[in-house]
Length: 330
Ligand SMILES: [Fe+2]
Image (cartoon, rainbow, N blue to C red):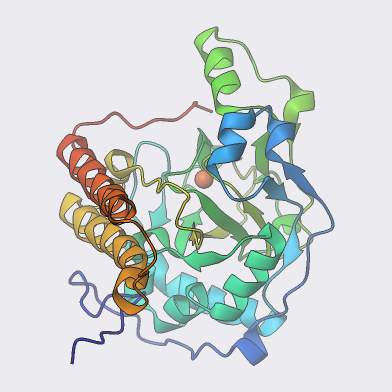
């Protein structure tokens, strides 16, 4: 009776209305997984050995690769148009939908899909798991209602790894590019502090062949932005978050930042389950396959490491509210 199965997605939810016409996600029909042809490494962005040692892969940002079939794009677009009724704003983004995975089973099943996760793991050369904070799954950006206003400012993400996928065709609009800064977060901070413009040769706009194509990146290290649409076109993108399966990688969840985007009660409930699941995964080996050869001091050290993560989560939560939203402007 104690052999519990831990759920990646919670069985409860905030009080969210579901969409009316939700297609059924079918990976055999909706996916068309392809590989990127190139990738930047963390070193290309100027990150040093201490950063490289803290994450399980050097791959920082890939070229654009196909994820969805034409049927997948049509179904996701149909879902996004219904979710558009629930857009919210924050100091960075004028219109986004968060928590859409609670409102649409299609979106939830797509964002949690193991075929996609396995595919992305192969690209990153390290196991990736859909993130356990549902508001960090399936984040959707819509173009601002004012033509010429950037979709999202220069920033780095509140999580370690994510995909950014175009739901609408990026080639039928004026502007609306997704761009990376080919440099580190610190370099961008110095540029902005000194009120310098970003050298154009260091701004990379990956080629986006069409709707249903995505980039995969270490969003916490790759500074990026989404440019304004310069005509009346619709621009919809979907950002999906992942965690490293390698639990020796320290967690990064920018809780204080998320409280600008989501209700603090929701952020807290999701973060506590995210950390809870992480710690449970770590404790699993001690429960299922205890190591009888280890010295007692090693077991103590193991428990201390687990406890340290809970202590650090408690500290983050107690300091989270009132943090200023970080971004590097337009
Ligand atoms: Fe981002």
